[in-house]
Length: 580
Image 1: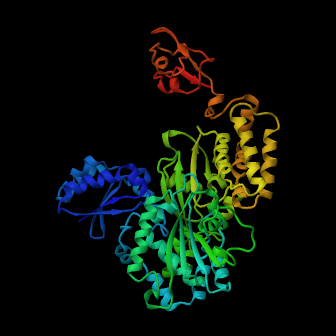
Image 2: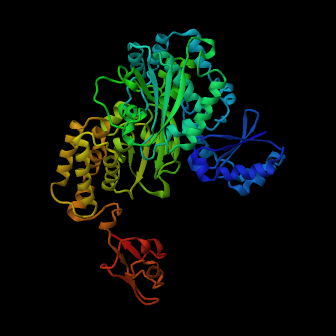
């Protein structure tokens, strides 16, 4: 019997280390204790799986250290000891409704053991490529698959590989972009933490296809566990002869190293990332020339993100046609999404292209938590846009999402309910992009700040006539004039919220009210005299001393003293405090 504790970052944050230590202390020889990565059900962490050989006997969720005794008892033969910890049928459907390719090993194998990966057909695709295929055949298989770059732009992977392959020069480089900067996105982190050898194998196949002898993984420094596990995986691959000189006894040689980046969002742009790897400030280069002709150290280079590489070995083993059979006409295969926000079941979701937003948010994600109404979903992070409830049946593919004003992006999917202010949401994302702008071009450096200033005024109740039109004009100018994708897409959250939620902008400007009751400066708290019991609890909780009244008599709020903190509203047990 094997007991596997999920120790991805999400599991560790929820207490997996303490659970592991508690089981280890008491387990003895009753079973083997193991670890695994994140299986994607972040809302149920910490997760403990119990196996008999390869058969999953029990999946235990929200496990606490004090539950160790029950797990030990089960290992000792008490079949009912862990019944109350077992995952429900409803939560099981979270995984059952997915199609997993990039995430196929995540949460199942031990990421620290290369033997586990190889037992799951790991490195067989690399062997097939090196011993039976020439580079052109590899590129053709990727072309057949229709795999598009999963980093955001959705550019055909085969085209980039072919361009680098055809570029002249003996020295070429392969780069993996693992600088996952979108707020709410954690797909790449989970893959590296849970299945690092899948990334390595995919990169080696790409390096062979383009003729690169050196590969670099650019990982944001805020991912220490991912860096640790990838470092270990690279060492193991070297020891097995899968990295370095004459891999698998062939003429192909390739080394791999990790570059820990400082986490600048602009380094999601490939030329800015190259500059950062070279030790320079991350700022985009003018294109052309493109990286395929002049990239890292001005040599031919190819860049893809983690999820793109995570699909490669599966495609080689199963055939490009099998991958292309999933998805839509213009968007093939599966896509991984990080489902976060006001959702019941947050975590990683991998689905075939062609599913709808409703399928992901309600069928897989379980809908909106706390019984509130779905309002919108932000797709594509700071570079994306907000899609409203009336477009919930939008098909998930590159072309259809772009038609809404949003983008696929790297796969962030932030769900919002009716308590979310859409003006405030636009302000949040624009604040992020304004701070992350590298400053190289005027449109992005100055334009985003001017837009942010307007949004800051609006949420404070200081908006004025013409602000909406001015925002739209600035959006168009920045999109047309910015040098790189960061500036060109920065206006998207503003444009989509104006397009679909213009009434909220108008309410902020004309009525000085926030319909979602989320903008602090526009709120007014008062107490209904007919419902106040005079318990004095609100007065005691008020940090500004703005509430007065006698015991068992109605209280009042001094509006001049009120700081709109909401403590009274949260404290009142009788519904006497109202907010407008």
